[in-house]
Picture 1: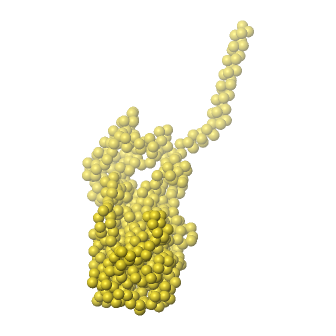
Picture 2 (picture 1 turned 90 degrees about the vertical axis):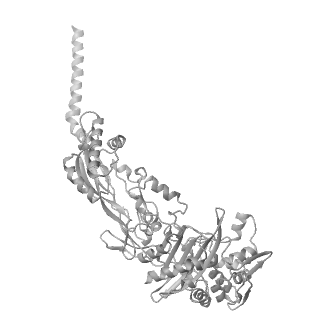
Picture 3 (picture 1 turned 90 degrees about the horizontal axis):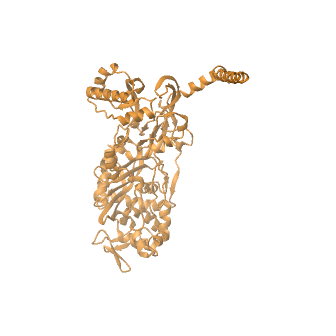
Length: 599
């Protein structure tokens, strides 16, 4: 009996301990557990910000937003009893019915539905976007009768001007949530579209050119709270805590008419054109051909589109104006002429051109095989005489020429906001590294006519032409003019102009160069006479550089200079790949540009 009593006592004590434990968890800590469970069923959903616009200086929208009507499936309202396969079959059946009714092909498969259910059950599933008016009308006839199907509206990037300034504007790509800075704050993360190239990338989070923190094109994210059930489906939307906000809008320095005209003269060509305002460095036009339409990347480029663009041998993604470096040819001669004058050689000194120049045992021909005869500097610039520049360049010496090219910014970036190449400046050290040979008189001779180890971008050329136009000084090229909020209020304007080049030279030297460049265009014998315009006075220099690419010989042709009228002064550079000559290929395009732009 004693043993039985002890056994009952032990059982009673265990029972009491269990009751106490249950009371402790359910009564004493019950409310705390309920709060914890409730908290575990709450999900925070991130909503992407609203992207700002990109505008030209004359307020044309280059990159904006459009409202896109889309069909959404709320899978939490489309669930069927029983196995998951029942729900999947129902969803696919509804998609097929909508596709048949609207005439819109809806790609839907079992794996796609599973991925959404398992990974994003709290979010609506987008099944069709960019509905046309006809598709929208047909859809509205049927969708109220289908539970879980909804019509949504979203803002998507829009490029209403197509490939206008494509390499400058850039394109977008969807952000990888794994790389996002705020990924850990949200259970469900709807990513932003982020800038991959151009202004879209430069001004993504900050328009830092103005020296103040004003934000960027990308708007701030919003977020809301929802309650989900045990399977993760939305049970109730509790609260929109922070609505998404608008990003800032960016105004470019580009003039839409100048840009459209520049792109028109490059149609069918591979090349680039840059137009600068000499008064402040504003880029009024920057065209690179061929181009691409940034709209193909919204919402995402198809494999065929991306493959076609990325494999195109003409490289439409490349901004030839800033990132392609070319042998300059004779457009370098105005800088060589400044070096010659700086060495003390008189601009009136005569040189005889028999049609060639002999350096050692090598003969360098002039473009006029019969020769130019006796000529001085102004006529030599007008006629682009190789013999004159070789003889006077060799007399000047490489060190003085090198110093002048350094002053003009060769071999270094201009400081432009977008990606750019530094080009290649000639130097003894570079030749020694590249070939193992020393610099020779022959190297100086061919450098004097813009050949050899020298490469320039069109932007660099336009910048030093701006310095010649301004008699020595040029401003750093800039592409962002102002920033606005989404209501159109000005936040910040252009920063003060920064001097980029200072080619120290007496003003009389620039007068000589300017006279020669004037005569290139405005005399009946000038090599660039086909650029003459009755709308504006053009000062120019032709250039033709022979190249070998993929074993084939060709010519890159140039026309560069500046133009003046009562309204302003503009520096420009045009390069066309595989042209005939600067005077034949490029000069007529410059005339066409100024006539059309200023008409």
